[in-house]
Length: 240
Image (tube, one colour):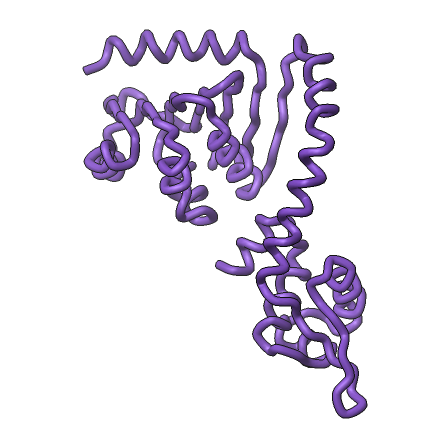
């Protein structure tokens, strides 16, 4: 879990393994940390240098042995603050570019489970409610595996959700928690409507993910989002 979280925060996979190994050991030689992290020793030298540049590893001498010492977890907070500060400085310029090309719809494509999670997590930027048409596959078999606290994150941000889903037992159980999880759920017969993909409509975006095909995409277009939002509203109003 810790390893996966570090990767989600932007660590390379081997960087995450080495940092966690060094943190657990307290201090150690390159060989000791490489063994603990199950990373090739030669590769460890290069990764250690990258971690040093980020301030997450430091060198020390003890009994003529060169040791590596992990910086405390607080350093991660510091790095995130630095990245946020850099982002804040360039946001005006990025927004200027966005306005310049606003008329062109943007389609971003992702592959694999990590790609599906990336697409799904984007809906936490929703300004207002999320409208969803979906089966259970994407959320239950992929998203919760990688981000088990997703629902709490959404609730904390006070983002409500309307869902149209098949009347599978799993979805019927989730429906009993609608109030506490800021959700409204309407069910359709799964034999008649066997949904194969997950669709979210929010802001000016439509996000589509497919567990079967291991892909996800985000269509950013106000006209597309508004049209599907209207269609969802029509469907919703006709359901019990």
